[in-house]
Amino acid sequence: MALTAVFGLFTLGLRAEPIQPALEPTTQQPIKSRPKPIPKILPKLFPTPPIRLLRTVPEPAALDSQVLNDRARMLQAIDYSIRYLQTSNAARAYQRYPVSGVSQSRVLRSVRRFRTLVQAAKSTEALQKQVNQEFSFYESSGKDGEGTVGFTGYFEPVYEASQTPTEIFRYPLYRQPRGFSSWPKPHPTRAMLEGKDGLQASAGKLKDSELVWMRDRLEAFLVQVQGSARLDLTDGTQMSIGFDGNTDYPYVGIGRELVKDQKFPLEMLNLPTILQYFQTHPTDLDDYLPRNNRFVFFRNTQGALATGSLGVPVTAGRSIATDKTRMPPGALALIVAELPNDQLQLQLMNRFVLDQDTGGAIIGPGRVDLFMGTGNIAKAKAGMVRSEGKLYYVLLK
Image (cartoon, rainbow, N blue to C red; front, side, top):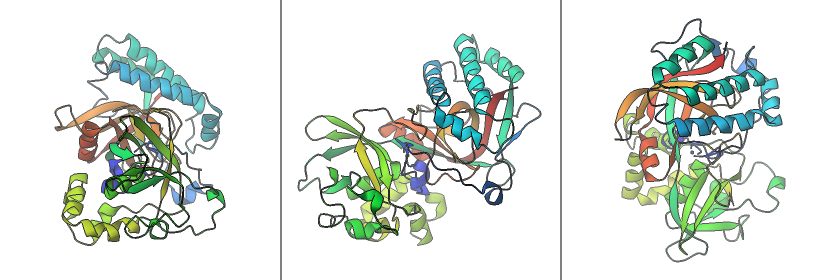
């Protein structure tokens, strides 16, 4: 994706393009990845600068208490950003970046310097002191212009699948069809492509484009939301799949649709509630899934790591997805939000992260999707992330 967000699922508005995203996701792109073009009229769409320089260190102080315990993953995530920031894609992205003083070279120098400090640090307090002395903090303007940022989580799911259809494995995921780039617009809707029940694609535009078959229709849909997945195949092997394009429709989150139809209140909107609803009301899938007309195609990624929209792997707990038309790609950031710990308990955390992904439901400076990893534990953690907090970008003075 960018890989896969429970951001969206729930708002279910996940990613469905680079992870690559949980349901709304993000996403997963994913795993992400597909960079979005930068609009030419940003000032009219977003009159407020997406980030602003703070004159002092933000409070609470930016102390990531786990960064040295998690040093290996932190350094890994940093190295992936360094790889991206040395590319021509990064150069083009920063030529268009709308905030003065935030350049490709400055972001690259900042990430490299932070890597040196993390590698050499003897304590989190010493690291914090160095960061406060050498770096400036740029606060996201947030969704309200006051710095309020909505946080969600996404993950790379693992599902069972078959490379041949059977009575159990009936619901396909698809390669990009031949000639897709020449399909006239508007593209066919989801219902036109696969039918209301998800089983009517064999005679239409998706004929012979099946990649794998899944046992559960909702799982197949969630893989499209996430934008990528790992699949345990019936022959005992494993396949990784990633985003390879989508039809030209906006993402519609089924979670929000359920709330709109008063199936449950907004406060209950999370992945377990959505799954439970459709377990109890399976025929409603024929109504709600076709409401999301964005149809996602996949490719076999040959075991590749979950990859974000920048074309580099994303790292569990250390990679975020943001709106890349507004936020600096590959940059070092600090998030302050309620996040699950290893005991699956929510607590307010400060965490250094790298901005390495995006997603269809991540729009504007007020949304962040945190990649939680691969598999069921990551899924549980991603489903718990639904809070408001702060986002700061950390750049050398």
